[in-house]
Amino acid sequence: MSKSRPYVIASVAMSLDGYIDDDTGERLILSNEEDFDRVDEVRASVDAILVGAETIRRDDPRLLVRSEARRAARVAAGKPFSPVKVTMTYSGKIADDARFFTEGAVDKIVYAAGGSAGPLQASHGTVATVVDAGGHVLPWDVLDDLAERGIERLLVEGGSRMHTMFMFRDMVDEVHVALAPFLVGHPGAPRFVNDAPFPQGPDSPFRLAETRAIGEVVFARYLRH
Image (cartoon, rainbow, N blue to C red):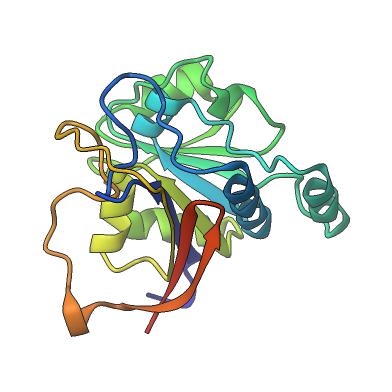
């Protein structure tokens, strides 16, 4: 990865069998309050948080730092109270009332492809920066553009397509995994990553840097070799 690109952290909470949700239509809680606070600490340490448009449609996340103390510390350091929100979309189908847009007075960036930039600019251009990505949204183009906007640390929070895209293209520097103590076993449910020919065994680009128990959740942190 070019040194000019942001440092990328991929973060996920998943079941023992690798699922990040079930197929019931209700959000599956895979972590606990102590781990949520850990994630909040990571959010407070980065310049931008990225999720795919499918995650916005499925989970409607706020993508904001929750802790008032961490917000205050960011402001004292001359930063916005919460990181920039970033998403990538091909269809452009993101609800007007999605909390990505409506919550938090922070910058929002939408990388839009497949002809969706124009309609998104018309519908959301007053609350977000819409970047026309042409025919495809490519991760290296997103990282280069974010670097030009002063983003040095990027947290990728999902979903499966985003994690697959960045990890398969070898554009992740650090991986955070919170492992829930149960199985899901729903074949149609989303997993951490989709099928792809990832390197395995001694060819893996990651090494284990930390493990710890957070209640019944196991947290593991991996760094690039």
